[in-house]
Length: 236
Image (cartoon, rainbow, N blue to C red; front, side, top):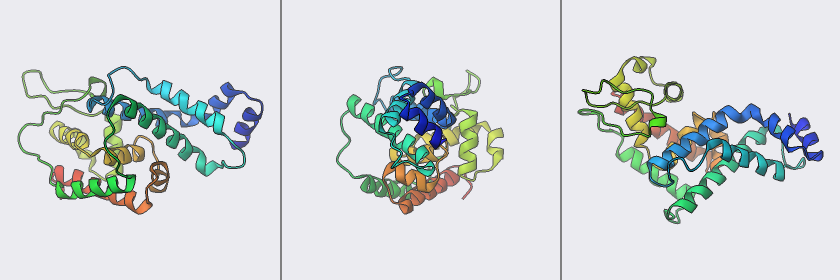
């Protein structure tokens, strides 16, 4: 793949270059789409203003412009794509909303880890009411009953695998609602790390590189997130 990309770069053939990168498209597009939906729900960006494929195209263009045979290898190519996607998403969110503060990524991760540990027993009492963007919802219960909003089935399956949750959850609408609610209530960086692991399919090492965090901190966040889901679903 790299040799082919090098050839297209030397020939200044961006179309052919992008076609090679389409091997990364499914995971990259899923990740970008999830991040945009989250930003819409948080009120950081207007609904419908940004298209995931437009951002992916900009990522491809940036990689083409920056591609250098001397500093790129197979192991770094996928990480570089996600780094560029993160940079573009951060630019968009920063343009659309006020800056959250000057916390470093490590300080933010430490802060969120403390929050996850302090609120590890997520409230599972009463009816689940989860207001979601409709593009992110698969189904809801009968209209004459309290709504239980659910995540897309493909994303649910990824969460169950990464978080080592039992498959039986998929047969229980109430627990699926709790799964969605717990995901929605995650702190921002924790959700980004989880989405890189699920939607993006990145390893802990790759996530650390994309986010500029120590690997140990990424692993701690993912472990805390896993515990939070298990306890919210009554598994611990």
